[in-house]
Image 1 (tube, one colour):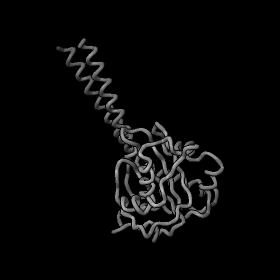
Image 2 (cartoon, rainbow, N blue to C red):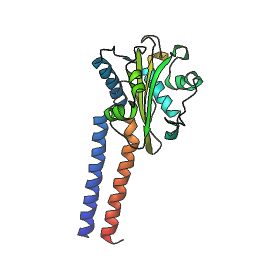
Image 3 (cartoon, rainbow, N blue to C red):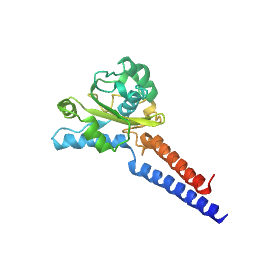
Image 4 (spheres, rainbow, N blue to C red):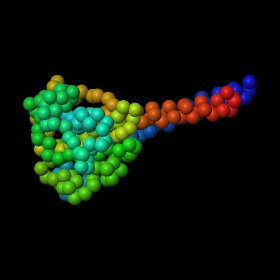
Length: 226
């Protein structure tokens, strides 16, 4: 009986520790999309190029852009690369973000990456999004005036998408929000929302927590000889 009680205490403690660790990870991560925008502007500043306005409407559009891929990494980059139809911006993306369709402005560049594991924003930026001279030309282009970024996992966690969209619009008129408020959707995070969002890794955290639970249950069952 004592052995069973000790095992239950051990299992409970381990689960509480796992949940606490995941909660701490979420707090530390905050909004990875805002961090992507900061990385963009830090790099532009280092090259004496004007920084870009973080437009929340454009950030939300970037998240909708990710969702259009329906978790299909195979069509992100490479010979089979695809991208959403331009008509989707006014037809689907804008309404889902509470953005006035008439205020949509030209997209002057984009970064899009996808992989099976979640990585930190600085790693995603330097290793996943900035791949070659073409990427650098987009990053340092003087045609951009605004930027919006998004990060999201897919159903069940993986794969993870990272997206940065650039525009040449005006900060007070482009990607204007109906009623002045952007529509927040989950899963996923987007920049400019004044939101300490960890939505991109929430599903990943849940997946890890369930692994911990199953591991603990396995230990208990084996120890009890069930």
